[in-house]
Image 1 (cartoon, rainbow, N blue to C red):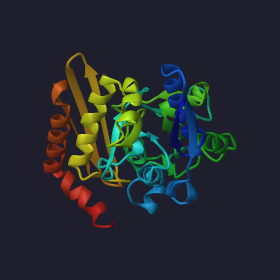
Image 2 (tube, one colour):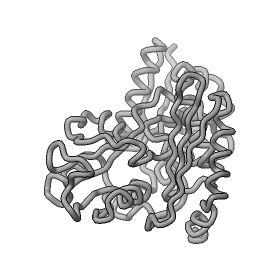
Image 3 (tube, rainbow, N blue to C red):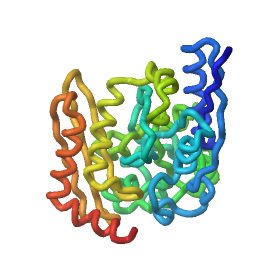
Length: 310
């Protein structure tokens, strides 16, 4: 008798690509397993015309999916890890973190082969991310940052229509949707540090469901778990901020982990970036230590402004 696994996912093109990837991988590894996608609309999806920073709250793109998982309506949830808050609801766990795609950001420009440094003065750059906006303005104060939401295709249409000079998107999403030919520059983390968990997928399950956890275990990637484990410990140490200019990236080299993190004010005037290095086996402690360093260097004052608004 075949086993049926219900996979919860958002309805966006990228989310469906990710869920299909998990479905295909699981069915290949487990002959006789049938995976069914359950498409769920989240709060973030319903409020497409509202800037993310204005919506606020944690888990904008996953809460309804997690609720379905807790109720037993689905067996596993597939998320973009960067959408997953540093604290999970009681009874749920991250059962697997598949191999991470390139975590960097990418520039898609109207002018082919353009780079951030060569865009015209006053160029209109589309992004929905406060993190990207702050770093872009720090590089070029003349940029006009234009809030854009919607899927990758919708954003590219706005670029092609001449509403924007360029877009900054996660490279991973652009690649997964087969749009890498539109990329004019991959942004070095020294220019634009990625979001915590960017490029990684999270497979969430119920803590007491050992059957599902054992099915997902082969998809778990050690290097990914170490890097994003440090990043998420860093985020947790900062208070797990949502829609705050926070960035973090762990880079693994052998048994050594290098972790970069930043916290900034909305105008970019207060900008704290630090980097530490240590043993990969102490990834979580490295993340916590980096958070403490940034908080004591002025990050606490920066973040208090955001958290007071919540």
